[in-house]
Amino acid sequence: MQRAYPKTKIGISIVIPLYNEEENVELLYGSLKEVVKTLDRKTEIIFIDDGSTDQTFQVLSNLKKSDGNIKLIRFTKNFGQTAAMSAGFYYAGGEIIITMDGDLQNDPKDIPLLLDKVEEGYDIVSGWRVNRQDKLISKKIPSKMANWIIGLITGVKLHDSGCSLKAYRSEVVKNLRLYGEMHRFIPALASSTGAKIAEVEVNHHSRRRGNSKYGISRTIRVILDLITIKFLLSFLTRPLQIFGLWGLMFSGIGFLVCLYLSIAKLFFGQGLADRPLLLLGLLLLVLGVQFIGFGLIAEMQTRTYYELQNKPIYVIKDLIE
Image (cartoon, rainbow, N blue to C red):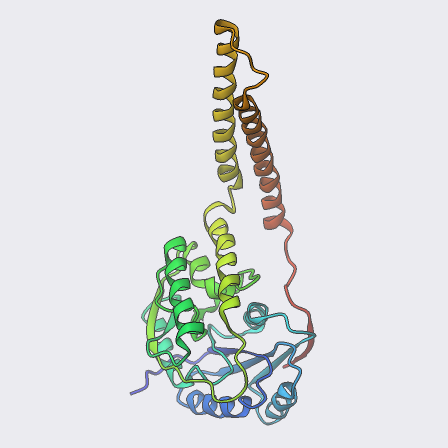
């Protein structure tokens, strides 16, 4: 039995980035409409055409003509999934935002499961593809490694952080600034503000049409972005504490080395001209000063980030509401 949700102006926004998915769009829309009919909330579907070079936007435009609940966003070029989701979040009017892929691998029938979990009081509900229908070497193994590393570094342990099928309360994601491949780190970013996160098992289907846009190279980029995420979570508002700590450590060791050599020279008459240890001590002193300087610069940049940043990471060609 479907749970009845209170009616609002727009209760749910379904955000779907698309890149060269002309073969899947109509089938995806048909599946979504069947699910939307079962939801007792006004629902909008936001398609983001991420610079497709095929007929994806033309197909979307035809669907828009017959359904006023569709909103289309078209990028000038391919900016990537993170930028597409960021645009979808910005233009979404729903209290709850659902994200999913447009390749028919996510199942729209799982949307009510996510909504039910949100109604239990969670801010983010992430899908977990228990029986993932992907290749072992190129998809499953790199994904498991990435999930383990992400959980270890961020402290947010999800079985499947890469699953695009997620539900968010709008206030959680509206103010996020996303770059690189950071859309998969939204739970980690949100957890720093106290968001409650849950995970539910969802279906997963193998890709039958079109070409995959994922691979091992993307996993490498995710790991690189993870370094940024760790910094954002731990030191964004206090960068001097990480750079300053290393600076003080290097300076302290360099000072002790130079002090030792000075005592050896003054009291024991040992020469310094051929002592590599002297170069090491001076190098550590210089590195220490540089690290502290980096920390001060980062502190100033942090102030700028919080006070002045208001620039999106995408350029929109068309917005059809």
